[in-house]
Length: 97
Image (cartoon, rainbow, N blue to C red; front, side, top):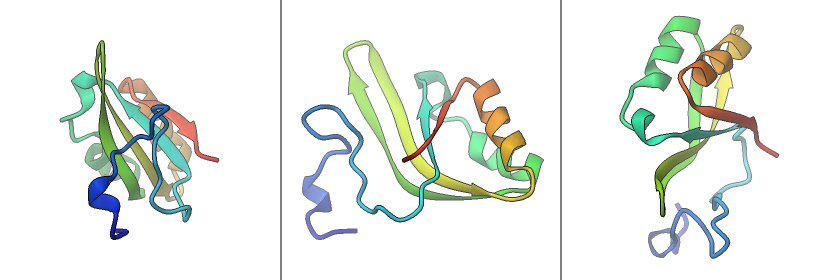
């Protein structure tokens, strides 16, 4: 973690998610409030025999509630099935740039 990370928020002034590292992070996930405490990544890993590596994560507070955001890698032979599982759980999944 960079030395100045404790002084940074998880978003900049525009609300964009701040990445501390440009390495990895093939997917960006958006967790609605009702999924923020659920063990969906653990379930995904067990069900589809995939590994995941969290690169950055945080919760943004918005006027209408909060959204959990995460950048991560998912690897394994059933990666696409795992991504579909997350989408079925109501998690917004997009490929990171």
